[in-house]
Length: 231
Image 1 (cartoon, one colour):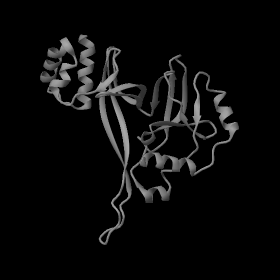
Image 2 (spheres, one colour):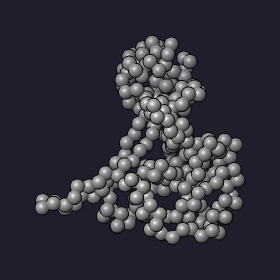
Image 3 (cartoon, rainbow, N blue to C red):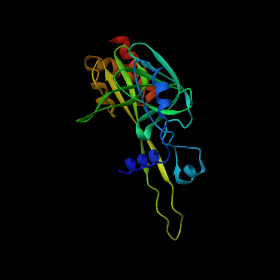
Image 4 (tube, helix red, strand yellow):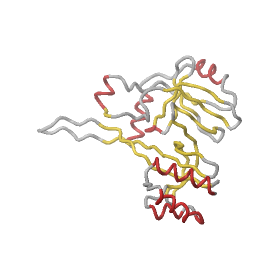
């Protein structure tokens, strides 16, 4: 509820973009649409800095980015990932801000040096669709990273201290995807992790041991690379 109120307040804080801005942008988009989004938040403003710690974005600054369609067409923009609202923001030639209309027509998204896909994933008994960062993309497997952001309420003022600022807290959860299966949460224990590789588990375990690897992203990338080699 706090997140919903926060986002609604931001949307109400500025006027909407003019209709002619939308038409001029959509005429260049061909196979996918952009949903209109007002330029609602200035994270560099004194008011924002006085109210919040941290940032609701994965990277605070706008970065060069691109959207690749399943047709192979590529569109380039200045972009950033609004993790708190699970939205990809971009700017058009007129410097107006929009949010990308995520759909199955999008093959991939690049922002700076990071690559993302919009895909289905499973967490326990729950399934969803969201934006996941691609850590490794092989022929038979993927290592993915789901970024989330929550707004943590600061402690109220008392006789000993001033009110603490609300703070944006970021978390990451790793997922794996084998063949055409849905992305699933990566097991935390080495034993459970090895079991996902089926009849290749013993070979993966030996590779783990021989190379003194740990359950950390940079080592897991090596493991998935090796799995692609022996598959």
